[in-house]
Length: 267
Image (cartoon, rainbow, N blue to C red; front, side, top):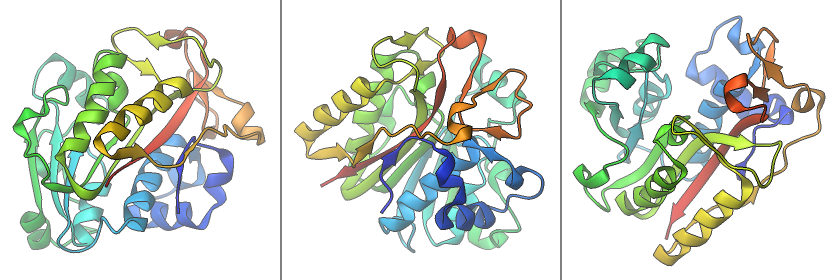
């Protein structure tokens, strides 16, 4: 069963990655490239599937879904999905410019994955603020997910509050799965500039400890960052390498980062 892991080169050669990359419907040439965004979609799907969250009749809640292909796929597998994204405004316009913002349910429909009538019956879409979970019913969802969104909530404190608060929305036995940024070049220094947070190992271990007060946890934290050639040869702007597993940019003050998946369970 998949652990809460850091993106590594070896994962791209796994059977589970190949399965979900194909099922999501990725086409040439992107599926030839080892890209951490594809890894995020694949790991979220694998983690939820292994834990029985994607079965018929399960209720799922997605945050900051953008135009993610997984929404239609989860619905095709039988789950009832509530997909949410940012309220309209300046930040929404920024994400929309990068094709990462959903303006309506129509942006999430993938006819190659699901029949229109099934999609309409199983997928709802509305705007939501991840910093205010009061609009959601507590104990109502079998699973929750987000991809590369938690780090943009405004601060480390807000990101932590969301991760812990999302657990209250789950039914007992539910799963909350999130991918976010992970610092692989520093164990101690915090990057938190108001626009993005890069989580350190100590941050995630602390959140895990805090969750346990509510009988929740981050499952099997594994911080192995890999030693394959593509784990060490990180990408830099303008990102022209055929692999994009680890990266840096001037805005990150030289830190090298990658993605990490947090598989959070409620008991």
